[in-house]
Amino acid sequence: MTVNSLGYVIIESTDLGKWRSFGVETIGLMEGPPGPDGSLRLRIDHRPFRIAVLPGKADRFVTAGWEFVDDAALSACVNGLQVAGVAVTKGSAAEAQAREVRSLYRCQDPSGNAVELYAGRHVDYLPFASPRGVTGFVADEQGMGHVVLPAPKLEETRAFYQQHLGFGDSDQMWLAMSPNPSDPKLGIYFMHANNPRHHSLALMGAPVPSGCVHIMLEAYTIDDVGYALERCMAKGAHISSSLGKHSNDFMVSFYVQTPGGFDLEFGYDGLEVDWSTWVPTTSLIPDLWGHRWSPPPAP
Image 1: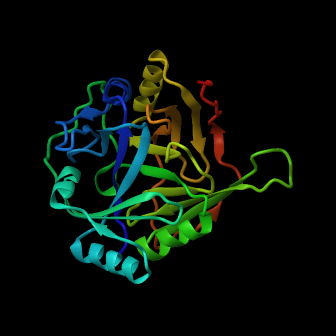
Image 2: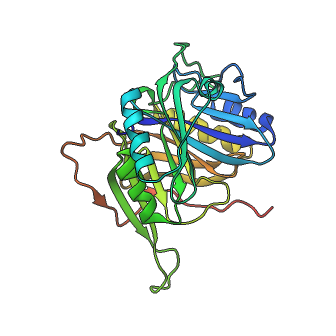
């Protein structure tokens, strides 16, 4: 019943053109044929999409899709959720087709984040070819990258992903958000799926209006990161964080605001872990160097 990887993310947008310009021209993702649901599909590997942007009435993150190795593992997870009293709905054949999967289920975590669970991936084997020269992304069996979700009910939400989806702890941080020592610290749990990526999911103990803190894509080379940063600055995209290196997963990355109001972390050389010997950690600092944060300009 353990999740294998982050398979995809679904986003809603009032302007697909903004996402096409950002995703294809600026970041360097490959545009695939539109989905049967009218979505803009963005590729980073041999899957038909890893990011799908649906036309809609809001600019927001919709859901993350979590992949299971087969239908038996998916069914075991769904049965466990139902026994625990979690409302689970089965996706229709048309909805599964739009996600390019065989079996699809939906539920919510305790913080209200929409969750999609699936098995039976579709693969079209079309090679990734970036229109901006990105050499490629660390994906395939490690999934598309990671996602950081808001979790105001932090402990309850962490337990949900551990007990029902099989996630394990990688690291945690408790960050002071002001100089006042009596202020509660912001908690973040970093959690791994059944693959070597340091974390496929992180949970931040605060609400976020866009529905997501950030998504992460991991490029093959540091030059891919540098060139992407140059393109983002040239296009006038808001750089939410300068180049830096994280303490817990050693990712060298920068953050840029997406048209959805949440950030994209574009990184390189993240830690890969042997979970049979890993001891979960508590990081006392978020970064080894860099990552100077800048809030977006006031609307």
